[in-house]
Length: 160
Image 1 (cartoon, helix red, strand yellow):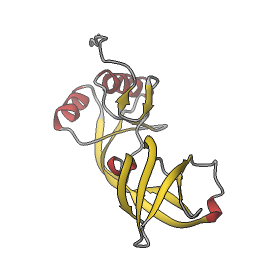
Image 2 (cartoon, one colour; image 1 turned 90 degrees about the vertical axis):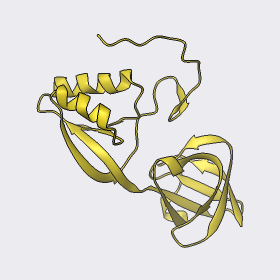
Image 3 (cartoon, one colour; image 1 turned 90 degrees about the horizontal axis):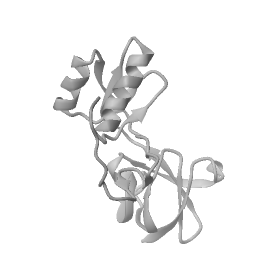
């Protein structure tokens, strides 16, 4: 089994040189060490120095020099829209205040399904749709990788 020890960010590696692809959902794209299987059926060991949140278009370099392109798998997410852009921004604030992984698009927000949060968003005037799409939430200003703070969570958060 080959090891993937080097991570290359999307756009910073020669995409035409990929010899294989690996399609992973959001959770599977965030590890340091795990056994994975490429789309072509080859088992590889992801063995990075630290956990990395892989994004669509990144590459993993195998110990024999080959490059494996990372593709974000479509998964069930909730797409949040609002007819008023200002209100959509306000919805993003509410999601961020709750530390929810949120993908921010030009005209939409995407979150993982959560009936409590969905009800809150509806009450705030949001339109919601269940869709199958790759999920790539924002990493955050104080995060070294998606989903994990570098600092303690000693600060308080309040709704306004």
